[in-house]
Length: 360
Figure 1 (cartoon, helix red, strand yellow):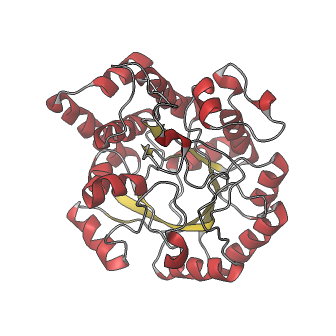
Figure 2: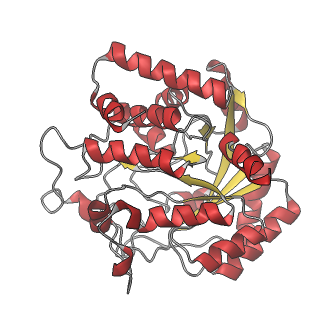
């Protein structure tokens, strides 16, 4: 699928035509990853962050947010819940928090892997190569890092460099720091995931089409996309300071655009694992997650963060626990779609095939 076809689908408004896209994506999902819906237990281990990303409610400059870090025992309690519920993966997610050092995270990974059969996905932001190698050797299986936008100028504006980093932000997409890190993660041996925010102020349809082409170039194993939800405590809430693209060029952050990107991601990366994200659930409730699963997605991520902390991981407003994320509720929800929970780790078929090719 070339960039022009992707762009045409992103701009498509005819519902009959769009029904063809939904059908193609669903058939591709069925053919390459099957009817299973893999459940990932999400554990938000810290809401501290050293970054000043203009779109995120965890940004360092937000002084009215109570900060927390889960203890190892609290994290292990969440992991045991995941095991008891039959989830094959836990996702350790946080702001970019240097308190979680290379050694500290490695010890936690080793503890999880020695006590349970689950796969461990890390989503801890931009970290050093030494840390990433250390965590992979400790047993981490996957790493998820959104590049947010492949437009380097827009990325630089929304995600200012920290400290002495300006050289990391070159003028070409190939010099985008997160695109470079994603290639590095693959070389280290991780199952690699990334994605973008849809509808960021200043993001054009052409930008978003290029993002989707980068999913294919990176040969991603996991793709997580979601709508940009305005947080009132961030700079982007001031639209006078953060203008949108010109009329007819700014991508909307609505549900339909999110479904389009999920469907197109499935078509360009047919063997990837793609979640119907919590942000989509916030925007569209159970209906949003249902349509995501019917239009290319094959993963859900029930939130296992203790409720006392969950409300403080406020990357966007109104973030909470989607209705029906208890085991019985999820089983019933999936049964209505003719789907069922996946068994085992739920590794990406794309990753498994790549490992076989390397081994041969």
